[in-house]
Image (cartoon, rainbow, N blue to C red; front, side, top):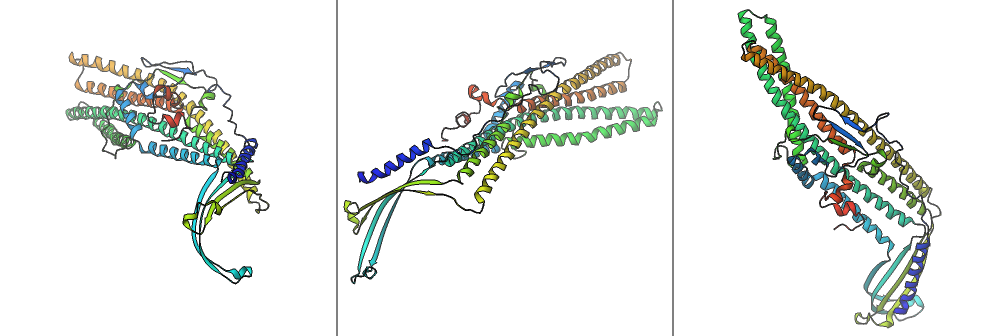
Length: 503
């Protein structure tokens, strides 16, 4: 038996040597070059502050972002919500399952590099016809067979290696898709919490303003009846009240939608979640805003890396399609036993074996193989164009957010001045009212002006919080620092050691 296996082992060793010395057809993947630009906004430096009274923010070009970036808002309640969302969100779980699937497909693909061994057995009762060989005596007998076949495909032109390379790129694509889902989830949670808090503050201020408007109308109607003010004054105030009341349903609708979105992100049905209530006062505006350089951004942002992985995948597919146009080689060997009685099946007298090599070379397939290779090249061109557009979109998104933050600061500065002036006016009117120098109506009017200024300030402040969060998400969320910081619990093995088997 050992002698019989000798030719098989020799053939396998020879095949391995051929594979090791063989080439891989098709282009090798080369990472696209990063952008040459060093800035997002033309002609401007990111160094410096965005000045706002007691709320300045500073751009720090080239600085890195922490993985748990939401902690920069310094809200323990927000940190708890984000952690809960990461643990429970179904979209993230689905993305993780897709990653595990691609990892298992990759591990399955590695099997092509090993010999394939299969066992076979049969038990047949048959009648032998001697007439086929010129005899006259026929016989009926049993035949029991056990055999093992070993085959090994020689990857002479690298088609199988390119196929596994493609599977590895698909796994990388799913890995970055998980990261993109994770980043989108955390960003949506933070933005939704901010939106809900802003809606709460605006609803409260609007209700206060409506109550003041109604008091003002009552006083004005009394003055109209007394003949001290014209009737048009009451009509004007009623119009203002109706306009103000019309804004309240939209605010409450937005608040309800934010609440429902937050519930679904946390894996609750709308209205069933018990998420903590967070106000704008519970949040601190991050002062230092790290801004990654464009050349670094394309090596960190998940959607860009996912697009790059697809370029890699389709580059490898060109090699697969090219190898399909070339001959394929296979080594095979079989060893087995035949016996007429089951008890004798392991007797050496009935053994048989074979060893050989074969090749298949495509000659004519009606242009199919050639067109498949051209289609693979077209898919690569498409993936490369998608990658470039994804990178450009990312640069544009960050440029928009940087500009938005500057404009938010300018608007907030004006809103603060307006609010401070209205607050000071209200303080003076109340002092004069206590001294009997102004009437109740003047106090109500000044208070209404203050609440109007407060509404504008709340809206701008909420937008500034959201644009800050949006910048952190657009920069990639700092996930590359998660291994050191201990974030992304339960996913580190896949994220940071993607070649390890998935448990």
